[in-house]
Structure formats: C-alpha cells, structure tokens
Amino acid sequence: MIFIDLQSLIIDQGAIGTDAMLSSGWEERVDSLISRGRTISTRIKNFLTFEAEPYFISNPPQSTLSDAKNFSTYPDLTSGSQDCVAHTSLIMTDKVLRILFHMKLRYGCRSQEALEATLLLELPEVIEGWKKRAWKAFEFVREQSEIAAKPLAAGLQSIQVSGRLSVDGMVR
Image 1: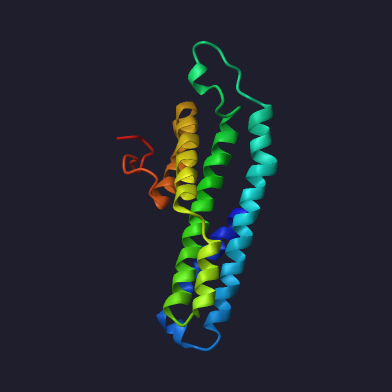
Image 2: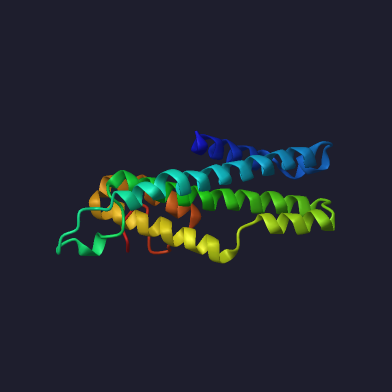
C-alpha cells in the first residue's frame, strides 16, 4: 500500500505545472502533497525499523566458509528485494519533497516556511547512505537471481544510484 501511495504522489506532483502555480489554491495542493510525502516517508522508515530490519537481524543467512562474504547481509532473496525497494522509495520520496519545497520557495513561500521546509528534508549524508544500502541489497539479489534483480535495476536507475548499472541490471 505504501508503494502505491508513493506512485500516486509522484503522478500528482508531476501534474502540478507552472500554470497551476498561478491559479488559486495551488499552495494548498502543494501543502497536501508535502503532507502525503512526509507520511509515506515515515511509513517506509517505520517498516524498515520495526518490521524489516528486526527480521534481517533475527534471521541471519546460514554462513559457511564459501559464502562468508554474504554473512550479515540478508537471510533470503525477498529480504534483499524489500530492502532495495524500501530504500529506493525513500530516495524517491525525498526527491518529490524537494521538488515540492522548491515550488513553494519559487512561487511565494515566506522565509519562515522556507526554513521549516529545509528542516524537514534529509541530509545529503543520509540520502547517500540510503543509496549505498539500496545498491548493497541490489547486489545481494543479483548474486542470487539475475531475473529478480531486473526490476530492482530499473528502480536504481530512476534514482541514479550508480552510473555503472545498465538497463538489463548488469554492472558494466
């Protein structure tokens, strides 16, 4: 459900154009989208913190000498996929929020609102950590299944995690 909400947010954000900024009520629409974006981000973070990460920790993969490099990664393919999708979604949500805050700043936001907006956005170091985590999860999934990695590759390309990732999900 969270990811359907994110898709809807992206579509709605894209529908707000310059012409809409000149009509009455645009600021309320942008505020509504910002609120939705913040809710989606919080729900994804809660999913990771309270559902996904405890599972990763409590169900570590079986370690042998041959797969010691994968120890402390993911217990299964589904976990790696979920982690990749969740972190990619956090990055997409942050991008949408940045665009919406930029719209407000450009089209009449007061300085106090601008300050509040910047406090709500994630720091670049946090976003970079999300990118690294999404990439690590993708690599785990790709090692397990090239087929399962293909849709994740498309998501990673949309957030430009790595310039080395090709359309078919292969590292070039």
